[in-house]
Length: 104
Image (cartoon, rainbow, N blue to C red):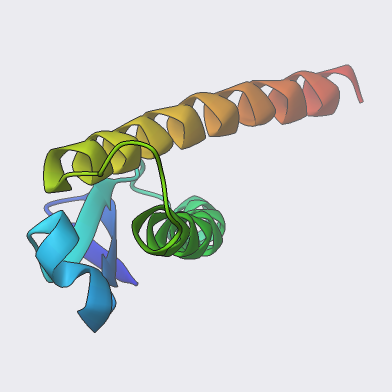
């Protein structure tokens, strides 16, 4: 789940076997932009859960009938947007918590 490169932590998770062909990879990795193990664990736990939700959404998108057939590129774009949205959400929540703690 966590990997350290230099002094920075990275999140990593295996892609489920049934989705590997769609995503074109066996694992996903994302920089957590921290050297703190505690913060890295918190971010990784949230990202692990969100990645699971993303995998479920990809399964739904690829098994339910749609008007337009999805391609692997569509799925990869969805996943990349998902990661960007997660990063933005986490940064906002982190700033909220820092502001709350500075007030206290």
